Length: 572
Image (tube, rainbow, N blue to C red; front, side, top):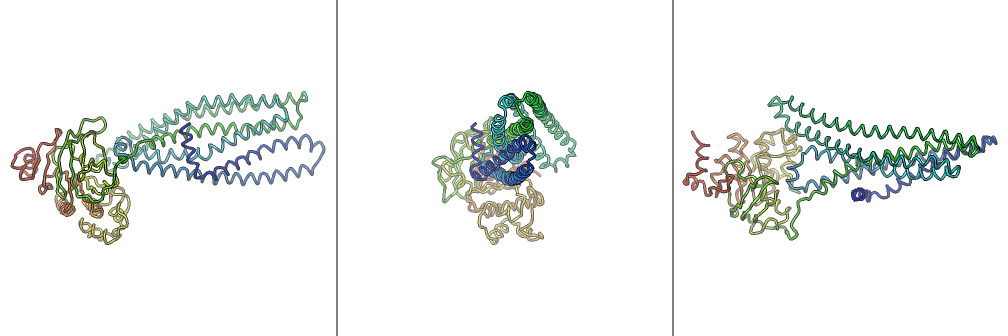
């Protein structure tokens, strides 16, 4: 009930359209109830009396009513669907906005393709329920009540015989509801898996081609498809049983009306006109039952999709502490004070870690993979929250700083640069509002990418392709660096920013990064030790935490892990 109430809340902005839609549905139902009544009158009164004039008058009245019914159906089909489309758009906006605020841990545990399925496919069924669900249910109720009243005026006992079937049909619908719900939910889950498989395969198509693994991908996709087909078959079987049994029961109902009405007519309990009206009323009576059946089916599809929508909407978002405040001027002092952290149920990555970076200084983190270097980079902008200790910015716990304010003051350049499928201009200016072309060009020049951009036919309006596929690794890195130059943050995080580049490109990028680091507190994560020699302090991290710390010269004199790594990289 709580879920239904939550669903109904989306009707609020369109309540006028909804009410008018229901009024039109009421008008359509009343028009449908008039025809059987007039049929009985014509057979019993007008035909025996040969009253052609009244027959023609009633025919004219019906033409007018049918035209009005046509206009009402037009509104229902047009504006009713528009209302549903707008509700679907509202849900998508709410869902997308909510997903933008979800923590990194949510995306660590959910596949992109499955999330796409919830945004697109699930909400399509929800919109169908939004339009047809209330309308079908309302029409069914009006037609059932209206036909019962009109039929009871003719003969109560025959009416009761017919309406005795309603509890049986409703019982059947409710009994099948549970089975259909389970199967449709399972089908949606399998559909989400297929979307995830497609998204994963298409994103990695270059790796697939490089390793000639299309056979493996086809096999993997085939397994996902086969699993979906099996689940779909079960859902279709449940639906087929539902519809075939419903049709059988409708046929029995018609037979009962034919036999009972015939006997009532023979023994004089009803007139031939009333008998004919009853036969027509059976079809009117069958329509609301069909609508109830359709409603049950739509309700299963729509509500299962809405429940999956609610599951994401109920996932807690990133949030500021109650006493968090924005930070205005940032000097850039970063302190890790006895920090502990682990990802979900994994082993502890950081164990009582402590260090300090003075404002405007550069700290380099080096050492074997798995020591927590990238984790430190993710903790500073609070992509993940620590479990113990505190991380302080200029003496203030970052949990006491609003997320927006904190992240505005942190710039990140990583190894895996992500560019949006748009223009170079859009990617450089991403996140920066009201940026002039002059400011953008200055940022590009400082990143050593301006001349290359100007050599392109469309310059800054050149499309970079999905994930920047039309640019080389070095070019993508420089676009990302230009983006950070434009942001101009006091804190800079360089997470393996040059590790995937060739030596010549690395030298060029390093020059840009050196300029970018001037006057900023900088955290550098690097496996290539040539990029950290100039750092004010270098921390060597392993699985056991900090093993060595000091400047390049100091660590070389110690003769420990750092010296061993350095000499290994620069051995002749």
